[in-house]
Every structure is written in C-alpha cells, then in structure tokens.
Length: 575
Image 1 (cartoon, helix red, strand yellow):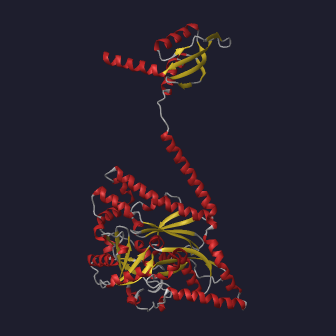
Image 2 (spheres, rainbow, N blue to C red):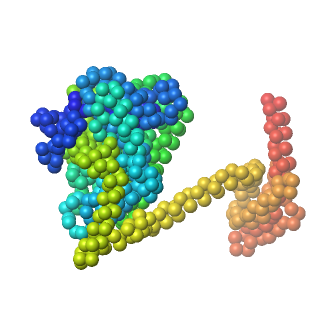
Image 3 (cartoon, helix red, strand yellow):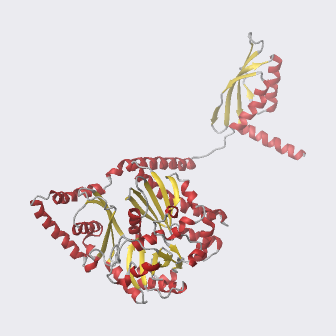
C-alpha cells in the first residue's frame, strides 16, 4: 500500500489504506511529498483500497482535550498503531480527509478573472469571518464551473476553505515524529466537486449524489456537470453506534460490523425499546435536515431531481436504498456502482475488503479524492500559491497589486476588468441568497404551521380535564327510548356542569299508541337513569294513525353513576 486516508469522527478514526493499480503506481498523486506532477493530470488513476479500520478514541487518552484535533501527536500515534493492526506498517504517506464543518468555509459567486485576483477574493471571503487573522490561516478554494465555456461574464460559484496554519504545521510535525509523512490535508468536498464535474453523468438532467461513510454524510446536486449545491452533515453512525454498543454490549468495531450486517433494519432487533426510539430520533433528525436542504434548492431553482446516487460505505448496507426511495426526492434512486461502465475508472476493493463485503462503490469518494489534483492542489498544508510556498500575506499583496494593474487596464479600455471590480458589491448581494427567498418563505411558513400545531398540542395537554359521560347518555337513550319508538325524529343533548354534571335532552318521535307511551314512561322511571319532565305532549298523528310524542328528559350523571355503582356492588355481593 502507498497511502493511508484518515477520517476523523467524534469518538473514533476511520483509516483506509490504498495503492495505485498496475502501472499507475509510478505516477501516484502524492509522489512522496515532492513537487513532481502526474504525467497527465487529466488521466484518472485506479486505486485499490483496504477495509476501513475503526480506531476508537478513548476519552481517558484525550485527557482534558475535547477532540483528537487538539493533539496532533495522539492522532499520529493512533494512525501508526492502526497501520500496524492492518499489517500495513510499510505505509508512510498520510492523507487527512477533513469535512467542511471542521473548517472555516465561505461560498460565494464571482465572474471569471485572473487567477491571482480570484485567489485574493477567496482570502477576502475568509477574512469576512476571521478578520485580519486571515494571515494565520491556510486557504484554498474550489469553483463549481466545468471550464467548458470561456464566457468572461459567466457567473461562477466557488467555495473557500481555511484552517489555522499553526494547526496544519503541528499536524505535519506530529506525524513526522512517528516517521509518517502527512502529505495532504484535503476537504472531502473537493472530491465531491470533482466527481460532479468529471464522473457523475448529469448531461441534460439533474442528479443528486449522497455520499455516506463513517465520518460524514455529504449531499451534492449537479446539472449538466455543474454543481448547484453541496453540504455536509456529521454522520449519524457515531451516535447510532453508541446506542448499539449499550443495547447489545458490543465494542465499537463489533457494533460497526453488526450495523453493516443487519443494515438499517437493525433497529427492529434492539433489545431495549428505548434504544429503538433513540435510533429513530437520530435518523429522523438527519433525514429531516437532508430533505429540508434538498427541497430548498429544488424549490428555489425550480428543478426536480431525476436521479439520486448513493455512494460509499453506508450506501451498501441492507435496506438503505429503499429507505431513500421512500423520501420521494428523486425519480430514481441508484447505487453509484450501477453507473460504472467500460470507460469508468473503478476503485478496487482489496482481497480482504472483498472478504469483508465492501463493494467498488464503497470507495467512490476516496477514489475521486485521489484523482482530483497533485499534492499541491486542494491542500491545506500549503494553501494558495503552494508551488512557490508563498505566504497568505504575499497572496493578499498580489491581489492588491492586481487591483492597481487592472485599474490601468480599465483606463486602456478593457471594460471587463472594470466590471469585475464593480462586482465586489454585487457579490455581497448575491451571497445573501436572494434567489432562495421564496423557497425560504414557503419552508418558514410550513415550519410556523408545524410549530403552531405543536404548541396547540402542548397547550391542550395543560388544560384541565374532566370525564364526560356522553357515551353513557347516548347508550341509555338508545336502549330506553329510541328502541321502543316506531320512529325517532330527532333529539339534541345539552350538557351543563354546576357542581353536578347534568344533561338535558328534548326528544321527538312516533309511538304505536298511548299504552305504549305509558310503558315507556314507567320504564324510564324504573331505570332511574333519566327523569321525564311533567310537561310532555302525546297527540294523534292523523296521517299515520300513530301518536306523536314530545318530551324532555334530564339526567344527573353524578347520581346516576352512584346509583350504578351501588347496583353493581349489590349484584356482586349476591353472587
């Protein structure tokens, strides 16, 4: 193996070894840390990957630190020990994959311009967050264009990434102390952008790529090879593993093996009901975030997703594809390996990885990352102007000098560059995402309605409650009155509670004859549930020959319940 890829989660590391396949090994991406480029930067290389190893980070080892990020030497030692466990102690070159949420990031829009100016703009965007301390940060940027068009006024979306230069230096030194070469610190999003531009086929359609592994979930939307949206979420696996470990008394590594075997249906096998509820909450929170973000983009841009591709480790656990089908976000949901063809450069699982049931598509993102540039590109160890090892201050000075030079060019009549500098204010306006306002309004309205309903439910729980006996009243009315009348026209029930709960019920209907009314009246009196007002009316109906009855029934439920309880007690004692 030539390299080891390291991913950092909250409670563990995920380390995966890889090597170039066949003759490509001589022209690998990193080249042992020197500046030699690949023979053909546009030629994609195939790589073979090992099974990922999960290395738990014990809280006791962290001591007073909250994350392994704060202890580069500890991180390096864990990677060194992990390589030994994997029987790959010969590996020296380390590539650290980082997620956007662990970095300072800024997305922005601009038009095409000189490279120095674009680099200066990226630094300016990071300065918006960190102020003049930007000189202490390593900055890189990636743009979302396909480079197929050369229109100078074409609007391009870019994203700048930054991390403290001191941290990058400490990480390099930490790995060096364990005889390891940290050759690249690269955002995973750079590989996602590269995949959308070079690998995922999106001509004349809109596709979404969902990359899911042990460290993050990444959502990417592209159309005609142009990325439209990219966002990363912390992987739910970290929290889910904690639940599995507690529920089944397993180690972290064993819990991951169990998750991969059982798939998403594992929650139905939880031994404790509380474990299933926790897992449902974790999954629903993540899915709600993904669905909300995807719908925001599709509504704002008035597009629909034709195909959704699932990739990387978690895409291949049982039942996960059907789970995404149920969201209804795309017309078709596929595994990324379903799109591989004869012209694709396919990542290869090692023999051990195949034995562990990892698939080609399990390494899709890593394969794209290994192909998305030389060791100096997309590398936070060096930042911008990497080949000359320039500082960020030098880059900023170059941007300012470029402004002066372009001012002169504007005077010479190059209106494009004059327009570019006028874009500074426009960029700030565009960054406010005004095109998303309508979709944001709709989603906010939905959220307000959902919250209002939730508030009403909570308020209802706080209201005083009393038991009503309306069901008993209706049942008694049916058996004592309705069943004994030929035709029951209508009745209404009025409820009152002034210390004693009472019901007032006017009834109307037809009876056979007057003796039937007497029997009905006696039955009501004997039962004791109702009392009939002395103001009743019984008259002959000339059309039917029957008698019309109008009467007023009342009941005191408190007394009726007491009477019923006493009667039940008496019957029980007789038995």
